[in-house]
Image (tube, rainbow, N blue to C red):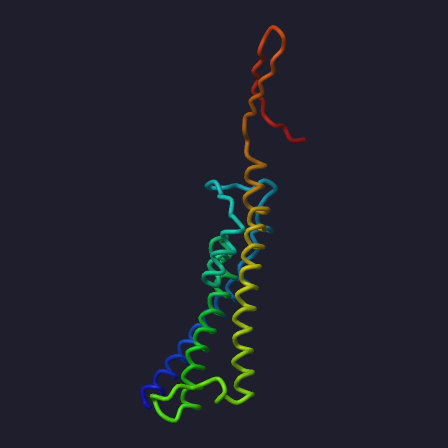
Length: 185
């Protein structure tokens, strides 16, 4: 019995630690000025950004909450969803121990669904729906985050990049090659 109490205290301590880190991450992200305010008209890129696939971002978030946000370089939301996932898994472990202790007369006895009171059944069903809700919300946010990344980071890079354009024109008696550069007014 003492090991169960020690395990519960360890889980509660870990969850408190996780929430402290999440709160620090959120306050730190709010303190940093937005990148949109500090950039000039034409952004300067150190390396070529890669296009982020929204389907892959959603698939990564479905496999592990927050992973799709990390893929699209949205680290604040990714950390938030990851902390929520860890918290939900901690609640699952705590709930398994709690309801096993509450309804099992001995360690060998199996707890059946019909043995659980209606109030506790509704709590378990609500918990399961919250898992599904947060999973779907995370996937939708990852897809939106990938689309936002492509719209704000990837496409402006290729739009503002100086490129030569090759055109080939054919007429009856000749072939014309020309190189050109886009001029913005």
